[in-house]
Length: 142
Image 1: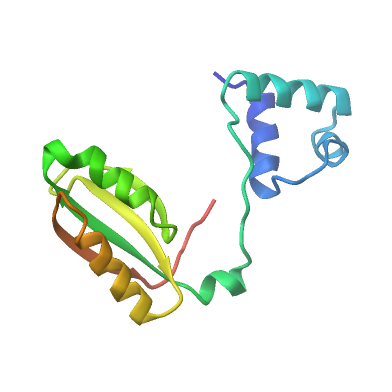
Image 2: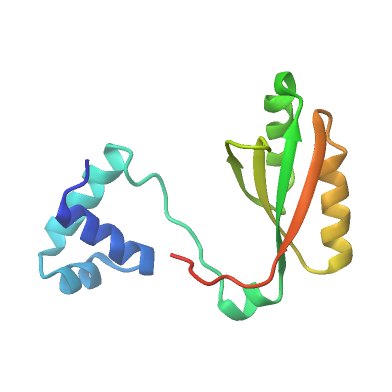
C-alpha cells in the first residue's frame, strides 16, 4: 500500500510523467535521492508499471472517440480480447458487470473510420452484439 509520500509522488507523475527527479524533489520538498529511491521501490513493488504519453488537447479534439459495448459468447472472451488487442485504435478495454461483457474505448480520425472500426469489432468471432456511443466531450480526465 503506497504511503502518503508515495501518493504525493504519484500525483506529480500523473501531471507530468517526464518530470525530472530534481523537479519532483523540489515540488515535494525532499532530496533527489529520496525521490529516486521511492520511484525504484514503487517500480519494484509493481505500483508503477510504466510511464505514458499524454497527447495535447488540440490533437485529442481532432479525434473522434467512442465507447463500444460488447456482448460476447462466454467461451470466446479470450479470443475477442486478443482480436481487440490487435486493433491499435482500441485505446482501452474494460471487463464490466451488467448487461454487456466489455466496453472498449476507440479512437478514429473521421466518422467513416469510426464506422469501419465499429464494423470490424462487431465482425470479430465471438462478438454477439455491439452498441457504440460517440464521446462528445470529456469533463474530467486525470
